Image 1 (cartoon, rainbow, N blue to C red):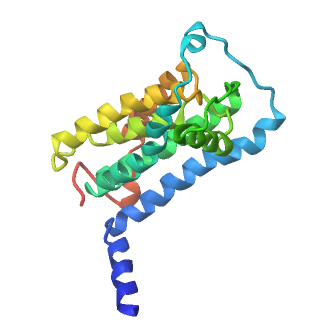
Image 2 (image 1 turned 135 degrees about the horizontal axis):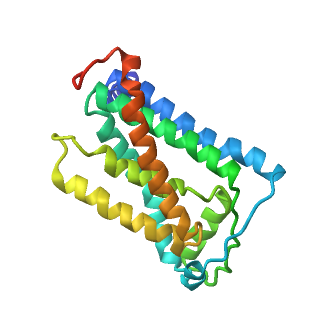
Length: 225
């Protein structure tokens, strides 16, 4: 039994190279900060609603909650693949993600949007799953959509990774599009939140190019494994 536990621990440690665990910890911590710290402050701030005609015309389609939930697994798999691509790329990717979460925190507090959930009719699997999502994720912290932002990062993070198969990059692009549809079809976000997620994501990526967070690891140039 001890040998089995040791083998399992070795597999977990071998999932990522040693340098990548710090990157992963920084990414997770920054997302938890953006998600939860703002929710401690938002009750003390005035909130706003946007009644856009486009959003009013988009129906609730509970089946899209499947894509919404599968996004979490997609981030985990793609994140591991990206962080395994070498020190320079991992530190650049993680640094950009931390910047994106900080920008998102500022946006959430500066423009605290909220929306009203529609009534969920039916008692099927998707309806029950959607109600579980509603129970865990209140309709604030809207713009930018962190769902869209994280999926955008997965796709962009695979750019310039020659060891990653083309089909995996294509899959991440298609899944990004599906996630964009899912956040509005399950009524967790407004259409403007999709644009916000992409804009903030790309802005953070460009900021990381200038800030060069990989220098923390003592890396220079474009190499570094």
